[in-house]
Length: 221
Image (cartoon, rainbow, N blue to C red; front, side, top):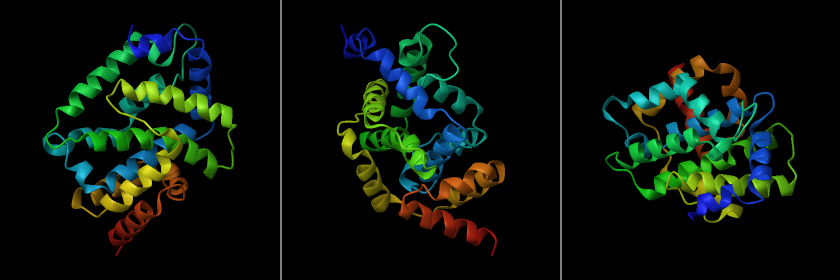
């Protein structure tokens, strides 16, 4: 039996996915947390460079319909009955397709995948801190255990969940920067999602926030 199968049949799973769905629920949490991930992504040139020709997949993320549906399935939202999260065969199949596609990109490195996985894991935690909505430590532990198993299906290792935020911030400090593509994506995203853009800026890592502010100031110069 694989690790994921053992976890899915364990007594912990139902409580973990319930904690995960709760973590991503609430007014604006999913949207603000998703914006946090994307704005950080747009300010890291080495990640933007690892894309198919034309960077079409990045632009579809700005519209967000497909990505939102995928994320909701992953974290157990919108399910009215039956299994949810990675207990669903279609969610696991989607993760496998995503993993296969991304590892095939020229220039993809394991550390890039791990960074994006860490960003996704900490996004609702930073969002709830920004919104002044503290989460009980037991719920955080259950949530991070679920995300560790879910990200493993993408080939992403969340090995030290207690320091995910610090690890992700170190990566942004060493890798963040301006790029023509990144600046264009930031401007376009703000035009499409102004309501969540402004609130998310306060949740960004300082290195990311500095680039976002500078890029958008230049756009109005």
